[in-house]
Image (cartoon, rainbow, N blue to C red):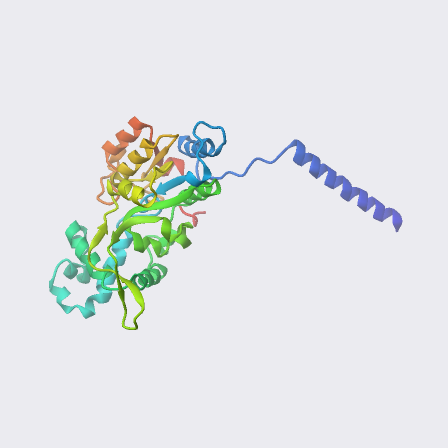
Length: 343
């Protein structure tokens, strides 16, 4: 019995030595931090920026505590077509509140929403949408509003994919955020959407805490409820319009410095990218171009794509990107897959 046992021990030792030698002579390649991206200029620009800003001695090195990246949400991190998710929430709230407001049946824009008149809804002006937001987002505490959003976002489904809206997040962008955070970056969402709306699900969906959400915001008023507990109420008054020039203004208000990287997809993000580039030091500016009508949507009108009022990416913005060295991400060419549920 001694001999077989010795032979077994020798065989095991030999296998262990071969494994160790193989690992030494032929080291495995480092895991791809962006596996959902095709190799190309966009992917390489991200990798290059992170390497340059995190390598000590590099001319573009940024200390760990000073590394910031900003991301628009709608159309940059998740699907925005055919209508913004928060608008869907607001329209659903109108229907839910309609029994308590019988006068809405004869008053626009509520009349069209209750009737489900999609043609009329598509023609709503900003004033119409403001009326709907004030009617559905105010008159409650911040905690009550957050609870409403969390309940809705857990139940609502997108009509095309029949999935929760939080599953329609772009997997390549999740990888970018994770890659940045793994290299000492703080990631911020800078959105034209409602700050409190996004805060209700951002941590679970993107891994971004509430204090790193910058968005359009209603005012808040400190008061006491009937039980004498301190609460913050949401009055029908706009505090921050976080779009266009409002984005860099609010970035400075909340962060107090230029980001090293900024990601957007529309004209509403233009000033954020310009502000990021003005900070210098190897800044990275990227715009997502929706040019994949099969896996997602195609709209612009940049680069000959169909025009759109939702997430407008004009030819002028496209030309500015080319002129200033910003990277335009082609959904069709640069992303191997768009959603995590793709096979």
